[in-house]
Length: 313
Image (cartoon, rainbow, N blue to C red; front, side, top):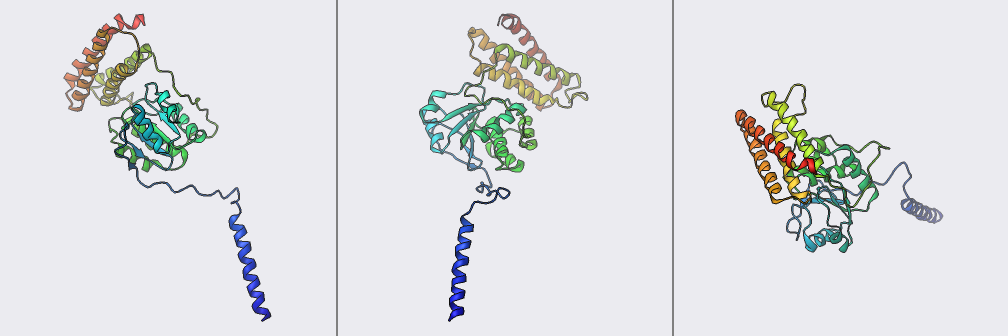
């Protein structure tokens, strides 16, 4: 009888001790594991006012720019707290604020994710409240790439998953810089300075945009001199990729840069964008003589435009 009572008391005591230990916080050297994240990107079709929405984790979504009140309401309905634009256009702050969303603007280009942008994305997920909705214009190229980098910075995903995100979003393989930076991405080293997070970043001036396209033209000329191949002294120059970046540059000038220019200026940009597309097509089909003729035509058009407009900007 005595032994029976003893063992019953011992069992009750052990149960109480185990219960208290289970309720105690884990020691600092053994942090609780994060909530399991999803194993595959999840597409979210049919959301009003936004396109190409993909869920990367419990905290990260990517997609296209929200349109009107319906688009921002759809983003808010996902549980998002912070909306992030990586597009060059100024975000619609009023529409976001109307549904309780905070904006962060981290513009990136089609040529890849610069170090400053990568550090800003890391700072974003470390300091701002999530979940996050990261968007570009249509949600196919820059937005998914930036969202994948944010997932890596948050420690929720690795590069192999990030590549699946780009495939799910339909990111063009032509944007080699985006694919490259997603594959190579890793959380920034501790102590690396990060740019401040702002609601609306300053958009480049027309002069700066034209200078950027001029640098691309210089790289195209190097490729032409090398027989429309990657120059031995410039292994980072890919002719087809440079033609793509040139077309995107002219397209972005037309869509984003808000300047007072005559209709003729808009027409000039439209024409040179079309020529850049023809150059891209010629290089894709290995029509080298045609590519040379088109590049010279673009150069002539740019020179004439610079004389009339850039010097007076």
